[in-house]
Picture (tube, rainbow, N blue to C red):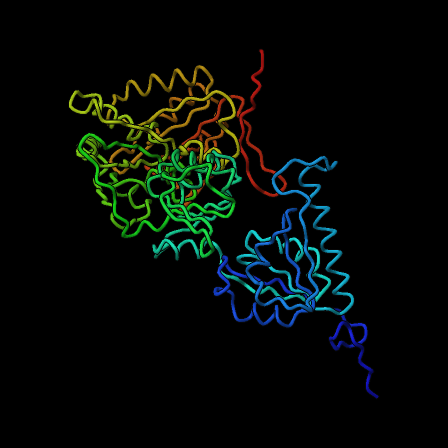
Length: 513
């Protein structure tokens, strides 16, 4: 026996069935860029819903206007606030949350009645779209389909007529409402970017582009594919003229012309790459590396830096630091932006000193030199072990290539007598095999044999090994140039926790006696 059908506003539905919810992406503004599926769904829907500000005009409705029938039920979801202040007890966010709940409830009435509801959304429904707030509140209760649309990001790139990303480049999408420092860091660190939601945020966004060194590359697109479309360079855009529906674009750097720089306009930036790969780079360092015309460094550290088209790389041996520094400064004198790469932090037994020594010569006195910090080997190994550097500590190099062993021994004694934790760099190499044993024996004159010693090797790298041994058991044969040693003080603790992990820490409080 068949079940009788019921009528709902001209639509035939099974008894007790609910309607279907559609999030319909309309594209960036030109109705011709709507998808065939979007047009189909609007034509079949019982209810067409769209968001608008209190003035009642809806961009979404205007895009789809030619497909809205006279017999469509229209639901205008009018925001109580957009950018203005509100006296709602929950503030701006509270007012919006209440609105979204009420709007979802209105749509649910139609869905419960068996009507098909199409919620119109500019661009793509789930890309910074108002529809997503309906989706989160209704999709778990009703049959739902999202119709993707062309985003303003794709439209902006198309209108600029320039590639957005190519090959291994990374695209970052940012809301202009982020804090200025956050915007600056992310713009400095990425290859390509699009910043959305301009309008009143434009002055902040422009400052972020300038602070990140990317302003000259940035383009501006307003109302892409819509009436009143405008494109240009971000640096030339009047802040008072920028609407909300505008984006800032950093296009692909591949094949983009590098600016001609006059002699004297170059600079040298000494950057720390941390102890290993990309995870240890700071956003500031990423930005400096990406902006460089030339990258100079010891080949092992240079290999950590991504290869970028059009960028020149100059690798050399580890023992020619002064020559490398002079080479970099000569390039800068000819107008090049030069990044000198260094492992760890460039100011800790690394390239910053070598560059500054050469830069202090009269011939290079007018060349700007900046030093950008990196994660040091000591900090990286300490973090893996726990917190052995939690109190006062001394950092020493055991290499006697640039200073006599007598000086190293005297400093070891002084640090040991002061009961300082010690981070020992450059403990050994193929040609230096006896220093670790000498240092161990010297420290045993002042420290307990049970003093914990952290051996951190290749921290952050594929062969990472971090373990702790007693000072008396420190074996020089287990130490090489890729190892850093952290020797505890009399207060450093060494325990095995319930999960089996061994941790080392030095208390911040030192006993008065």
